[in-house]
Image (cartoon, rainbow, N blue to C red; front, top):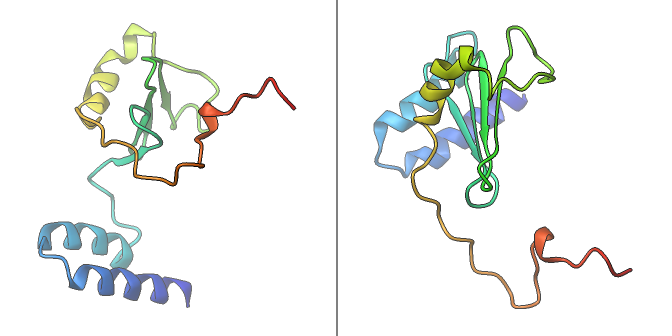
Length: 124
């Protein structure tokens, strides 16, 4: 039941979009979940913090310049960061191509709202 509801939600949302290519790519996974996915997933949490996930790899780039890369075939729990290992430079270079070159600004917010990093954690 959930799969059907999700599929119809996607179809309803993309019914109003003009980009048929993106609609087709997303619906492929819903219509045939066992089919291999050709595109990496990009996740962003605050400007400059991005993660790229393929079937095998996860690459994370932080706003402060730190990096992580994990081979999920060998390390599914992400225990060994391979970012500084030159043997994985090719995989890292391939994944970094999917990181956005520019970041969107924070969305407007009410004046009293603060982001987590803006709190003063030293006072009770």
